[in-house]
Length: 338
Image (cartoon, rainbow, N blue to C red; front, side, top):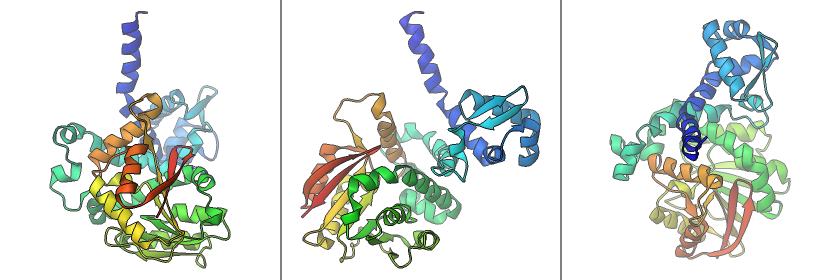
């Protein structure tokens, strides 16, 4: 086979990537994955449990086998693979909500990517919607629930690496700035019995965060603070944590936020920034997820993924000092001090 044919063959698979997302989202949305969590099933049994068309359900199951989500067991039965089990709601590192987020929200948004690249404007700006992506979620509680659940899925997946790298046993009192439903803070407190903390975020996140705190039995060590981090950061915390916060915003707003953190920071305190760094021009398949995430920021909230040097520049522009960079699995940590 010629090189041109090899490349065209690979490209064909890339171009069909949206079909994979749709198949996985459909398997979750219709309950096919949950039907298979109890064990082997025929397509008819799955269809009966999910109220779906049996022959079409079998066609979906065959595709899921080809994708490694299911296995064929004999001529008529199917079961989940270990990877497919990660789409179940009960999985320890479930990506069920992330599948719904990609399939029901992001895939629709990305269909307008050309307009964002052409104009430099987000989907919300092009639609004339006030408040950007987060304003839209405030007006659409169902979308907010999908988004929050997806963020919790991703946070649980990476929490162990972040906690190990960030040395939160000696973090003192932690403020998770923009901490949403509290997933990361709860995981930190579980792993670090002497640590306590609070979540700072908008009012729409409070009910979910308090439920997470109560479910984890952390009410004595965790709390929720309602606030706008662009207006100010409350003082009295030893560690300010910003995970996937700065990438949502342009440089100017990032500097405002970091300056607010500096004003609130105790003299011996630290700011822990968790982001995915774009490599300095050495782009490859290893950086594809972050590069595609950057396009998602263009289409979504209007921020961007950045290189380590760019994040360091934001930190110093806010009057802070970069103390350390620490690899943390999919993420990197920047530790900043006064």
